[in-house]
Each structure stands twice: as structure tokens, then as C-alpha cells.
Image (cartoon, rainbow, N blue to C red; front, side):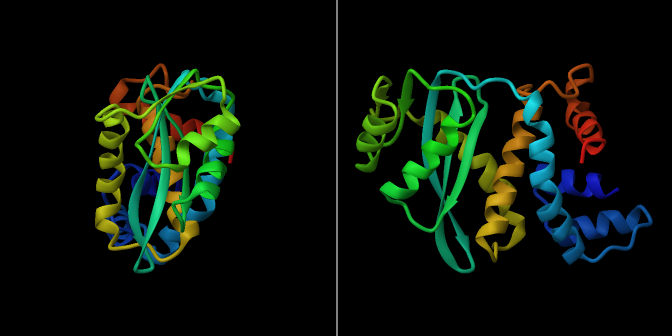
Length: 213
């Protein structure tokens, strides 16, 4: 039931109180704060357990930031997806600057692929960072070239809407990374739940991961 509650929180547009109610309907009395703690404690472990099963990212990346309020202040979430729709990495940051962009690309490159092309918006920090970290890659920043990731942001923002605001950066990063894991499993970017009906792939994958955490 604990893994089920975490999966619900990462997959569906539910608040922690919504999950508390769904668990109560199944005979499990749990406070919504406990549900929050399950998500914070288990999501990093699930991501780590899934890592060996992950497909290598593609070689064309689309990078952008979205804005979310954390403790009443606007914060930034750097995200990258490849040409196949795999979310490569996410990074929550209090600032949108050169240092944050560098941290994000260092993390993303640790996923095991150096892209041949990176598409961004026209933020002035990107050319310098890409010249430093990916001098061989083609940098694209034309109008509407980044629509792929801007559309992908919307799915994450829809997931956050019922949560009525996040209170801590750590929570923001955890939920963001967990949502990316769920999206990637559902899109077939992990060797998890591969023999299942696509509608049941996520449930099967979390059952497999539960044995490893």
C-alpha cells in the first residue's frame, strides 16, 4: 500500500489529502503528512533502483525552465527531454543564472550521453555554458524550436496544481524527479513492466521496483 500511495502521488493530479482519503476507502488510516513523508523518503530510492533499467538518452536535447512557487516564492525548474520524449533530468533552483544552468548540464551529462544538438530558448546564459561543456554540439535557439519541452512542462504543472503550493525546495526536487521517473516509465524508456499492457506498465514497474527498495 505504501508503494501504491507513492505511485498515486507521482502519477496523478492528487493532493496528499486526496491520497489519504483513497487509502481510507481501502481500510488504511494514514495521515496526509505520513503520505508526504513516504513520497520524500521512497522516491529517491525508487529512482536509484530503476537506474540500471533506464534507456540511454537520445542525442538531441530540448532544454528549458519552468516556474513554480515554493514557500510563496517563484523558483525555477530546469528540465531536458530528448527527441524520443525521455525526460533526461530535472533540477530545482532558487535562481535562473549561469551557475544554475551549469549545475543542470553537469547533472544531465552524467546520464551517459553527450548530445550532438541542444535546443534552448534565447536566455543569454546558454551559449557560454554550452561552449564550455558541449563545444562540439550544435546549439539551436530559434523561435518555436523548443515547443517540444514547453508542451512537456504542462504535464508537470498540471500534476502540481492540486498540491496548493510546495513548502520546501527538497520536496520540489523530489516530486519533480519522481514525476520524471513516472513519465519515462509510461513512455517506455525503462526496461520495467515491458511485458504488461501499456495501461498497466506503471503499476507493474512499481511492483518490480518495490522488491528492490
